[in-house]
Length: 379
Image 1 (cartoon, helix red, strand yellow):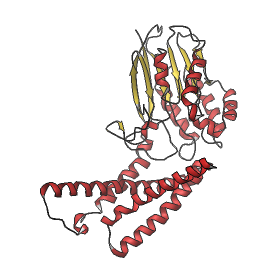
Image 2 (cartoon, one colour):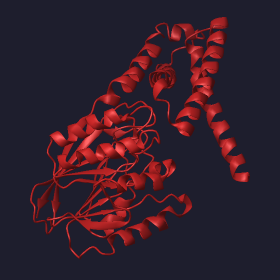
Image 3 (cartoon, helix red, strand yellow):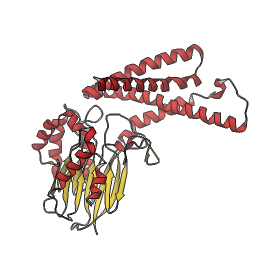
Image 4 (spheres, one colour):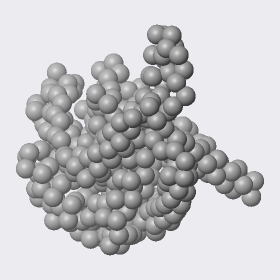
């Protein structure tokens, strides 16, 4: 009960700060009754829109019929956030400039932003671009990875991650993605979790993976993410058991006819004991791994990159972060994880944090979805 009370207080505080941030900068765009009416209208819309988003996406997660409407609502709220940032930056820059130049204070904020329409227009454009253009602008990236004791020089692995079946990513979208990955003719496809995120589509998605097994000579290999646990991991594993998908849950297997081993770890769902469970899962996964064997680890959370480096694993493929979902100049705008996006090298071990292919939040800016390819090179 105490935990729930604190969680409720945190959520209410966050929403209060968010709503203040959304409506306060409007004072620089409007005045008088127009300002009051605009604030009331926007506040009412945001409360209803955010409540609807949380109810349907976070709780039910099955709203395919309302996806386009929800995308528009998200784009509108995001445009407000971006517009608020633009306005506050403009105010800050002007304030600093006036102080440096010793310009007398002008009480007329209408004069301050006489062309204020530029700010919401730019914000709306950026939000719509992220919601309806970049979110579907798939990019392909390729990396060469040196691997000791590798017999198959040039072995090629494709990685997908964080597809998040649901309102914003259908089974038809998944098939298009699989076709794109298969067209590059990799030897193997690795999927690092958070694909099965909609109970209405999960079974159909598992059957689709089975149909595409033969498009990849060494098959499709899979590790679990946190959202598989959210949606019922037992049922998902049962669906996958009826396919030829190689699911790795704290274990390793040698690719048939190859010198390469693939290991995979489960997602530690007990957050207070995340670090201890991560080490336990790694030990279990690598228990039967031959010494010095060329190995690729599939792990949904990028924290496993450090653990893999300690064991001299050649390459770790991870996801979970969505690359931060918002970035600038190739860097995450909100780097809340130790490793958020792209390639990490620790000694002779490499780790990759995939930007993800889908998301439960329908917008990407400076962080498009990707297919990553890894060419293993013998050294």
